[in-house]
Amino acid sequence: MRKLNVFNSVSLDGYFTGENGDLSWAHANADDAEWNEFVSGNASGGGALLMGRVTHDMMASFWPTPAAMEMMPDVARGMNEMPKFVFSRTLDRSSWSNTTLLKGDVAAEVRQLKDGPHDITILGSGSIVAQLADTDLVDTWQFVVVPVYLGKGRTMFEGVRAPHTLKLASSRAFGNGRVVLNYGR
Image 1 (cartoon, rainbow, N blue to C red):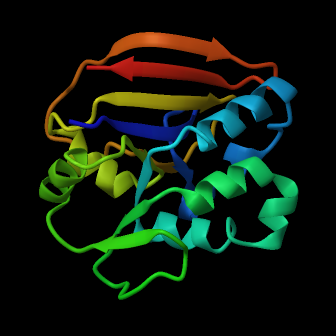
Image 2 (image 1 turned 120 degrees about the vertical axis):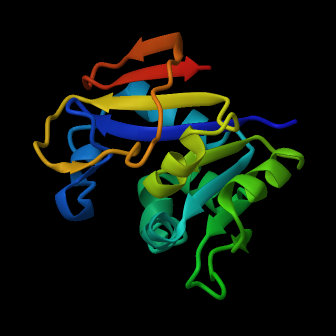
């Protein structure tokens, strides 16, 4: 069975999006050679991506563009080439390459995907993360803690029914102040 990983940036006060879905804070002041190498390595690591419609729409409006290829060619190439699975009740198709739309029950669909050929990473997609947090389907959690506090926003764990304890597997600090925390069950 393939692994399911959650990868999200979070603020110091625990939000993965700011007020009104703002994500500008997650990318501000990020320039750092070691960080850029880490991001490129993550994007070229293979596997498949899983996301909701909102995350899909945001990413599909950027990664296939010439600007993305100019700014971050390795990341753009990886994002465009990877298989992508998108949960949506409203999309009928996607123009982003290698994208499959999913309409069924999130947990059931993810169980089927984990029987497939790829490890899967969830990007953003707080409602999907929250739906899967109470299951045993998520194998690893990777949080990028960004050194900013927002005061308002949205946690990716809204609606979780019970506390869950994770085990720290590793951590890595970068010169730009970001810290990557890797957790398992």
